[in-house]
Length: 76
Image (cartoon, rainbow, N blue to C red; front, side, top):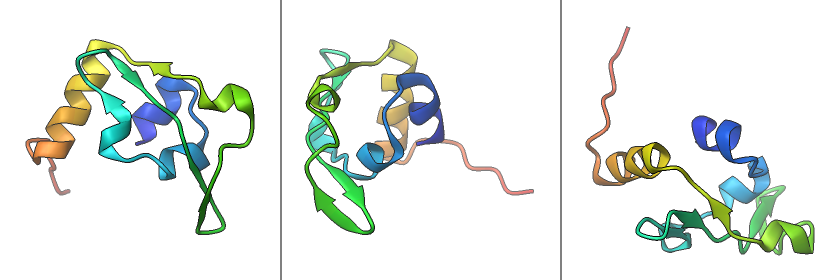
């Protein structure tokens, strides 16, 4: 999520509102449709926030790995 926030420009509240169905892996984009503020799910802050966000192939691959549990987690 940190990488997605840093590279996409998606607000943290919008990241918290994402669901897997919002990610179009084949089309390489994420649909922003909701946000979470103070633990309440609601609409995005602005109309501009609801535009699809294009993601690069390496970000899509990282998300797929995370979703399938094939990401590498190394402890200290």
